[in-house]
Length: 100
Length: 100
Image 1 (cartoon, rainbow over the protein chains, first blue to last red):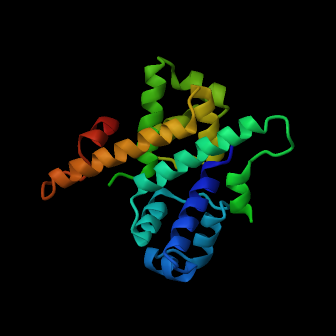
Image 2 (tube, rainbow over the protein chains, first blue to last red):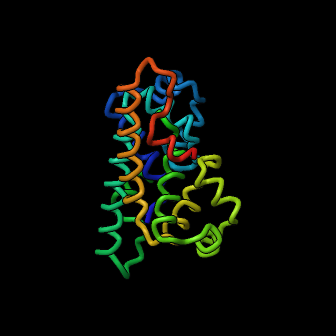
């Protein structure tokens, strides 16, 4: 099962890319450093609730909407894990995309 | 809008109480300190993804299920906030219960 921060990061990045915005634009609007946002998107940094709220606001998306997407991705990853049980893969395609 | 860690804490506590389990029992099973779990439940500490996963496992609940509940509570709090706009209340009943 992937960690929450990995799936949150992947979801935030996917939203940002869907809006064709750069790390610089969104980090500036959210008033977080570019490096911090980049680490959050890569699942390397645990975002604080305050900064997560600021990033969501900068993306113009409700936190609840992000959580719904995260929940769905966790369930998908879980299904993939079950169907691959016994193989060497721990995560499955949902997170392979994030790691790429 | 309440912070994510507050709603997560409230949701975890409500699950634990629904199972009639003590902080001691759940913290022991999750291998986190009792004080840490208590702070997480009160929204005072940002739970790391690893510890959140351990707490969910100790409660026998999927993280995705917790997130669904958190998302719902955020939406409810948002509705309450909108309907109370202009009053002195910032949170609304959803979080008043948590603060009690």
